[in-house]
Image 1 (tube, one colour):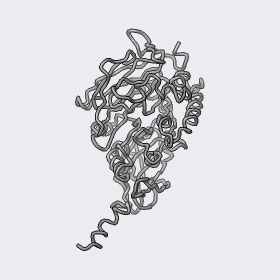
Image 2: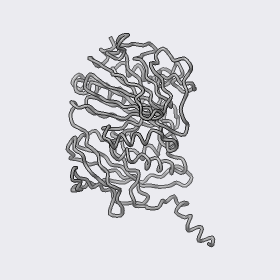
Image 3: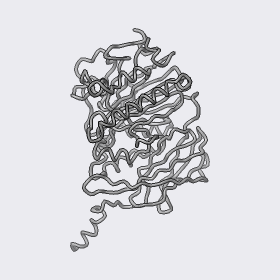
Image 4: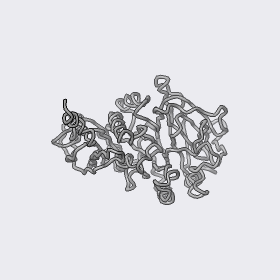
Length: 431
């Protein structure tokens, strides 16, 4: 073959184009905050229409359709690969109803998928999978999560930062591969996210472009209600990346305080008594590394020059449960505030605890493997597990939450389980 022949074969790669330009891939769902709606997001490598055809199950006839928009995303790598991110929000859904759907255009359709619209109101019991730090290489927990999803165990997934390792690698082809890999899970239940440190390249652009979280901050921070809980997702990374925007620290902090104030109004808290936060880097941990959470004056806990610290803010508004990742292990803390343990009682530490409960769950699996712990646990550390796995969160009702840790290393064994029981929510519960 001559030089021109080789060049023609390599031209699509050089130009950053992929085969099947119009074929939808990387399909995933997100919850826009309305139980009668669901957002479908996917990628093509050439411009095409953005259409979702859907219909109620059983039956599966795709009798309705919705249209949306596509935005062109150009990766910051040297190839400047471009792709088109399609977003369509389905509206008028019946809460709790299962729907079949496919997405794409007459130039190419996805395979059929199905999802269940979230239930309406506050008198139901959401079940969520929670984890962080899952990569394209060694995503050990993913097959088990996929099996759980196919069995209908979850109403939503919370991925608490760090995707693909890293989405920008290989001129964003690693991101493409990861999004395809999680598609069987993410196309079946709302896949709710927050940014981690591994998303920082090119001003977090791969994260901001690919996911469709509620609100108007490109998924950097947002909140939503599910059953009797109010969930707040935020970025810990604003504290660490100057280019990304330390100027965003006060902006996010002010937004958090406004959101917590609104969530704490008596009528709101009666409906959604549980306030749950999710952010990537924890403010406490007992791992054997030099991450922020190992420092006594953690930036996340205390803030920048003792401004905009999150521990006092979350304590002030009575946040019940704080979900973290970043450390590649599982750690459950005793109820803790300012390094002091505030158990409900010696026999029932999580019954009416007098401080927030922290869970660190960053061992879903990635190429960086697991993180060891310091030999002796801290006094606020209740349980530490150095296994690959993930957390299940069952918001049973207004007073009970069940948390359990699934070990993939131990063939799906539940290696930790605890009820958090609260008869009173809000800062009044601390006294």
